[in-house]
Amino acid sequence: MFKFFKLLKDDVDVVFDQDPAARSRIEVILTYAGVHAVWSHRVAHGFHKRKMFFIARAISQISRFFTGIEIHPGAQIGRRFFIDHGMGVVVGETCEIGDNVTIYQGVTLGGTGKEGGKRHPTLKDNVLVATGAKVLGSITIDEHSKIGAGSVVLKDVPKYSTVVGIPGNIVVKNGVKVKKNLDHHKLPDPVSEKCDLLEQKIAELQAEVKELKGADRHDS
Image (cartoon, rainbow, N blue to C red):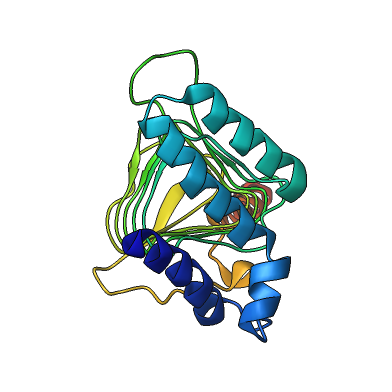
């Protein structure tokens, strides 16, 4: 029982580490939907482990109604899991989430079809998943990695990486610990970079064509 209450205390403490808007413990306990969803899940998961599936599912659905966050009772969640705002978050049944993981509103940790067994992602320690990102399938997001806002990730992500885009592309992988304070608007954009390269190539080709036309006129 002491261990369970220690888990609940950690869930409150992590809010002060991650959210500068948090002012007091009573405010966090009474008004933070992400905390309510995580606490409800911890209770539901206890029933799920005891094979009391109906009660577990009922608790998760009541929590979903009040918080807008849907966490399947079967998901395994570690310590200090922080859901910022959280509306529209979905966490699938076979998800495994490590310690000190942060996710933002609109994130889906889902499956890709009707396959059985392990069909949802594994997020290891210190992972951050930004607003609206979709992490799908039985893949692993390794330690200290970031998933950028709006990204769709379908493949494993190694340690200390930053992934952005649809589908997700690794844009940072340097073996250096990535800070947790993700600036959503400052992430690299591989699509934009490709467009810039194409524009540059088109300009070079146009210059070559103009040069060739000038040479033809001179020969004439």
